[in-house]
Image 1 (cartoon, rainbow over the protein chains, first blue to last red):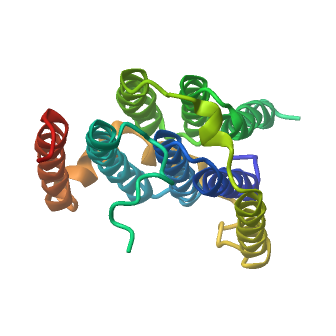
Image 2: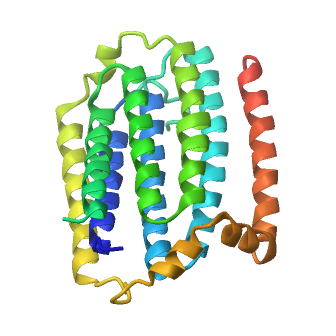
Length: 101
Length: 171
C-alpha cells in the first residue's frame, strides 16, 4: 500500500488507450477482439485498485462478473468469427460488410 | 525503494510493453502470446493489491481458458496474407492515434485533477481481508446471489449460442 494509487490508475489508462488504438488500427477481426479483451482487463485493474485501497470487497466481485461476461463474449464472438470465415473466407473487417448500408 | 514499488515497476513495465507489442505484431499467434504475458503480469499486480482470489482466477480464466480459445481459433482459421490486413489507410491510422492520445489525456486529467478519494492512509488490514476468498464468497452468496445465478445462465446461453453458431453453414 506504499504505492500511490495514481500509478495503478495511469497504468490502467495506458492499457485502455492501447486497446483503443488496437481496435482502430488493426484489420484482423481476431486481433480487434483481443484488443477489446485488453480494454476489459484495464477496467478490471481499476476496479481492483479501488477495491483494495478502500478495503471493500465489492469491486472484486464486479471483476468476477466481468470475467464471466468476458468468457461468454469470447466464446460467442469467436463462434461468429468462425461462421463469418466459413461464409466469406476472410477475417478482414473491411471486407465483412454484409450489414453495411 | 521498497520491494512493493520494485515489483510494481517490473509488472507494470511488462504489462505496458506487452500490450503495445500485442497490437503491433504482424503474426496473430505472437500477438496472442503477448496478450497472455500481459494477463500474467496483471495477475502479479492483483497479488500486489492483496486480491489473491482474483489473481488466481485471472490466471485460470483469462490466461488459461479464454486465451486457449483464441489460439485455437487463430490456428483454425489460416491467417491468409496477413500483410494485406496490415496495409491500413494512413489517415485512419493517424486518426486512431489522435483519438487514443486524446482519451489518454482526458483520463490523466481526471486522475490527477479529479483527485480520486483514496482516503489518505489506506487501511492495509481491511484491504487484505477484502481480497480473501472467504470475504468474496460471503458477499457472493448473500447480497449478490441473484447476479451470480444470472451469470450461470449467461454462460449456459453463451455455450449453446457458440455451439449453434459454429456448427454449420448459415443457409
